[in-house]
Length: 72
Image (cartoon, rainbow, N blue to C red; front, top):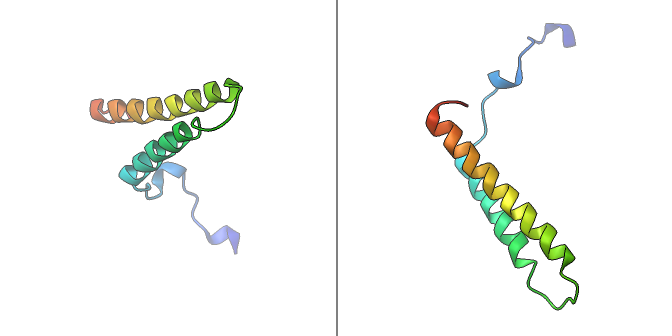
């Protein structure tokens, strides 16, 4: 019965593997950069791929800085 379950917030759950998440994000960024190599004429999609890869790297760096400073 649903009424018997305790109410918990997301921060009370066991967190995921942080190192595996960072490796996954950086691997995805590398894969996005590899997608820029190809036989296409227009390079508009390259800008989006590079921006997404840079965003992932910025998130990983920001997370590392916040955790080192104890702000997260």
